Image (cartoon, rainbow over all chains, first blue to last red; front, side, top):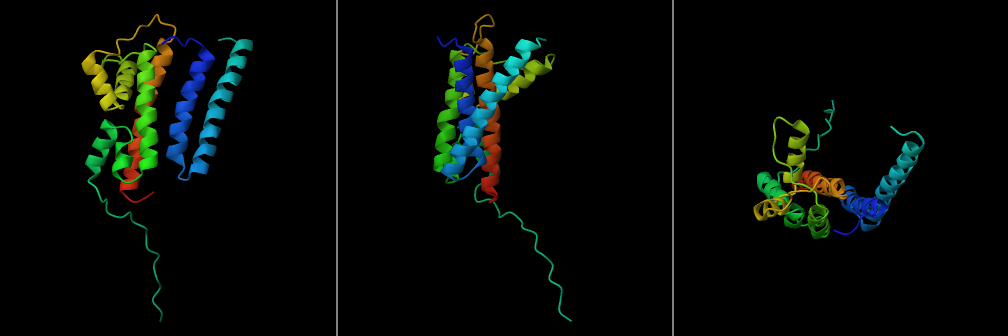
Length: 59
Length: 135
């Protein structure tokens, strides 16, 4: 596959996990979208924050 | 003297479908358990998303790990791979999933494939709860 952007691949991964997680955890469409958005935001936000921490304090 | 009423414990209703068959269908066809148990919307989402994750993982040159008891982490990854059900069996049969460790996307591919299998395990557990009338 020609996608080689780490950020894009991470976003695609987070999108799939958020979709399945949201649908799995909630029952109404509105709640599912909300839960999915929260999972997606947590994954992306967490990864970006962790990335900056590791940039400043490399292992 | 009035008899004290004891609170009844809520026991789940008897499953309408054989549980082992729910597990088998849910494992083989991601979302199949939900479709069979009358949750078509959830089932369709799983049916599209989980095999798509698996295929994207293969396209990113991820690997289907072998069962190596001497390498516990590899064995765990292999177990997670198996969780994808029919897509895994088809890929194994057709010889996909050799993986290319030097590929830039190798680790992403593995993450997609392993996560698809683990998410399917969660989906099967959800189908189990539905079959028991808990959800």
